[in-house]
Image 1 (cartoon, rainbow, N blue to C red):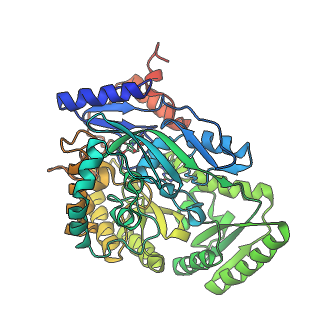
Image 2: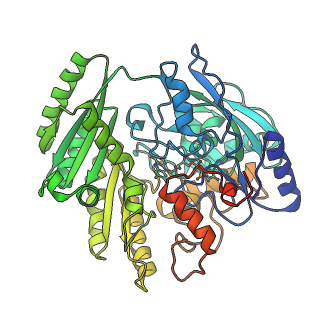
Image 3: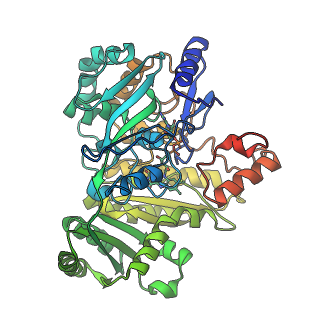
Length: 503
Ligand SMILES: Cc1cc2nc3c(=O)[nH]c(=O)nc-3n(C[C@H](O)[C@H](O)[C@H](O)COP(=O)(O)OP(=O)(O)OC[C@H]3O[C@@H](n4cnc5c(N)ncnc54)[C@H](O)[C@@H]3O)c2cc1C
């Protein structure tokens, strides 16, 4: 593990790796879901580069180090009436470098989009140790890896143009390199955002900020079928909701109780509207209520108090931690990030439910219904000898379903080591080849995060999953320290501080 104290340290470790042939794995808080920040080689822990600059209230911009925590950035913006509108549920502990690298998103991406649109400038250290700012709207710097890429861009465009319209109709995508976007905008920054530490190490970001919301109101709608809930999500998007989140029955049963949400409720949608004032808020909420009822909602609560609004959003944000505390089963994230074209949401959810029930697995479904992007956490009983066969079969079915519906396996979490071996199943051969050409242009020696975005031979999706009870346990003290960290959701804690005497 290397822990750079400043950017010069990052350059030094990259130069050392380039010379010695070692691979480097950039890491923020390690909260990523796809195994992008773990792997063989030297982990470069960027969490110490966490400075946050002053907010520029005229340009609505802010500069930060890659290790700055998302919530701290948002807090700084809110002090001057602004906000950072990308709001992952992990905002309290994930780093802005990790977010830029995965093109992270959150409930409000329905209105504001994912990270890519909010990154104005990236301070990058490339695989040969060269450093450059890549800024939106300016010609890219001509350091060797960028020059190399630009000289090959026409050829890569030709390869890519054979890719047809892969994933074209999903609203969120963190899979592959964003070549479609890059060839549309000509902005190198669009390619670097979402590149998961495989093209450059991010050592600084300049972000855009949005004005804080003037007035918000939340609606809670219950549905007796997933079809109706999917239609409700389309209605919410049509009404320009700022967020539209789905919690399905399995989640509600576990997190609250069947009695609290009604026996016949199969899913609820939690929807937020941002408006200019209270009067227009009430008017928009009434119109959306009618649209939700027309879509099949059995009840719509529009009169949430500030307290109940907070409680229900807190419940949504606590989804993953609630599931991770279940006893007797393990909530596993390997089909946790699928996104499909919006009109295919109910086909996706019903298809996933079917794949789960054929294997008698409970799967909890929740997430960003407005963007047709849902998290599915299967609850796996690891004491069963064949759990791995079951999990792999489920994964195969969901990958095939996603491909059939024109979806992506990762709407916001990235490919990581989990999904990179699966990319050829959801991307065309031309797209996969174009991704490999991009990687070769920036990092021919495969120094940065090998095995992510471009597959390595012999790797499988869940082959290295850490929960396997047949693996040798890690030392007791380390296990206890890590369990404690997960229990407290203290993912941003500096891991070396878990060892006595290091701070
Ligand atoms: C409870 C919970 C809820 C979550 N909710 C959301 C959510 O709502 N939305 C969402 O998008 N994600 C969510 N996540 C996933 C995760 O928090 C995000 O992917 C986040 O962006 C990762 O940030 P990190 O600092 O932990 O990055 P890490 O996990 O450390 O790294 C993620 C990837 O980015 C690369 N990377 C990290 N820093 C850099 C850098 N400086 N330069 C280059 N590459 C780098 C790593 O190599 C890796 O590939 C959630 C996770 C948890 C545990």
